[in-house]
Figure (tube, rainbow, N blue to C red):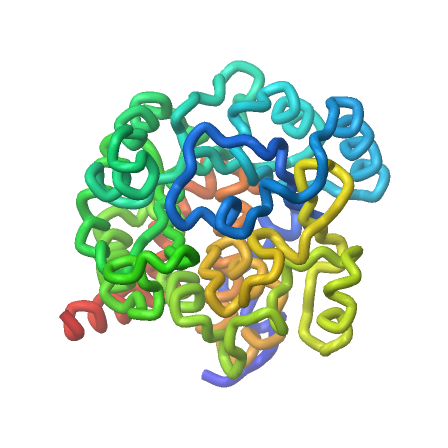
Length: 369
């Protein structure tokens, strides 16, 4: 039904519940921040090292870090995504972020982030496939990181698995998801970019149709454990949002203080005016979260696509179905990052997946398979 009215959409009680929770949490003024140039493993295809982001800026002191924390508080930052290098190697700095901002952190899982002192911190724990694939991609065929990470975060409510799906290994999605769910955790899928030209089953240009089908099946089986909606997965893996195609010209997570982005800021597409992606010198910023010079067409990062959807609310006001896709995306972002009531959000997950057309997506997946 064509309506196009926010007021009318919000007469639906469930949508009104989600919208009120997000409004109560307030607007996000975010940055991304690398705590260190160092990492205790080097994953194949990792954007951080393939882009040589680890070489940006000089080594910084804790005093430099403290000055950045204070300046960002004064600037009004209220949310920090901690990435870059391996954050578990800098627990002192991580604690300062946790004590001063709402935040999340991505970790390879090899070194456990303690519970004490980080009780409400969302932790995205990386996994890149089943044990054999993960060993090949993250352990150079020699180290088993996945079982170590499983043990470190077993039944840890802070942790969710940040599962990087590769096109040719989509058949592993069921096994990996089941193992993560048995471990007492939730799962957020993202999609692999073949930045180091491994080719074969790792080449993102093959497309992710089979992966989307498998993810749809996992949502059907474990709706209370999956943090990626079918809608978000389709936008990320196809690079399409209504009439737009993903790329630098539409990316919303760009450093607004970096001169390289001056022309992008004037092209009429929305962006987050507060956002900056800080390097580990705690002074300079790069173009965006995951890139310096590479083409953004190959970026399949789920966080940046969350932002792309969220900042294009107006495009989603044509129908109630489109608005539901937008609102559930917004709510999932707030839920994952504990910006809304955690227990309430957990109870709402199955209905969120149902509302955005789980039956339609899974029916299409079955037909295609």
